[in-house]
Image (cartoon, rainbow, N blue to C red; front, side):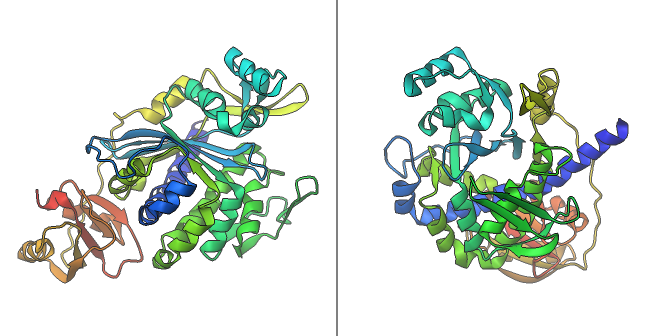
Length: 423
C-alpha cells in the first residue's frame, strides 16, 4: 500500500509539471492574443452581460475557480470536465479532473427543470449527459451545480470548447509530436460508424494532426484503469502539446489560433476580467500547481458503466488539494558565479537592467547581455534557468522571484526584472 501511495504522489507531481505549461502558459499566450483581438472576443466568445469591455478594476488578489468543458461533436455532451482554481496570493493553481462517466443523482429542482424543458423526467445519469438531457444553455443549473455541490466550492466562470476547436488548434500549430501508447501491442484502433469516429494510430513517436489527436484523447478501450487511464493519456498528450505551444514559433501562429477558436469557444468571462489574469499566470511554476482526479472507481450499475465518487474519501481529498499549510522541503542552493547571465527589464522604468548588471558584477558575476522584455510587464521577477539548482542563489538578490526551468534560453540564467525589483 505504501508503494502505491508513493506512485500516486509521483504521478501527481508529473501531471503537475505537464499542466503548468499547458494551462498557465497556453492560457497566458491566448489571453495576450485575445487582448489584441478585443472585437473578435466580444463578437464570438463572450456569452455574459454587456458592459464596458475595458472597465477599470482594482488590483485585488484573485481567487477564482473556472470550470472547463470539452464538448462532443453535437455540442450537447461534456466529454472533458475539469475544475481549475487559482489563488494569486499563494500563486497556487489546482486542477481537479472529474471523469465524464461520473454517476449523478439529479436534485429535485434539476428534475423539474428537465421536465419543464423537455417534457420527461430523468433522475440518474452520467455527468457528461446532464446537458444532453437538459440544455447546454442550462449548464450552470445542471453540470456546474453538481460540481459546486460535490467539490464544495463556488465556480466563478466557465469555458466550453468544442472538439472541432481542439482539432483546429492542433492543426493551427502544425500538429503535435506524441509517443502513442501500445496498450495491446497494436496501438489504438477503433471504429464507430454511428459517431463517425475512426481511430487508427500505430504505436510509437509520430506527429499527430488535429483529427488524429482527437482520436488519441477520445480513445477508451483497453485501459486497465478505465476512464482514469484515458485521462492519463490525455495528460501525456498535453505534455507534448505544451512543448509545442511554448516554442518561440508559436507567437507567429497566434492569429491562426484565434481564427481556429473564434467560432468554437463559449465563455461567460468578460475581457475586462480575463486580461487581469495574465500578470499572475505568467509567474506560475510547476511547484505551485497540483493536478488531481476526484477519488472513486468504475462500477457497473444496472448494466451501465459509471465512475462512482468515493464519498468517504472526498472530504480528505478536498482538504489535501486546497491545504495551504503544507511545508515544502528546502531546496539546495548552489553558488556558481561562472554562470552566463542575461538581464531583461519588464518594467516601465528605464535603466533597471543596467543597474542590476552593475550590482551583480559587483558581487562577482559576469552579465553577458541586458535588454528589454517585450512580451509583458511583470509584477514579479522571474529567473529562468537551465538548471534549477543554479537559480536559487539569485534569491539572495531578488527574494520574491520565481525560479522557472527553461532549457531553451540562450544563457545559463535569464533574469526578467519585475516591478518588485524597483520597489
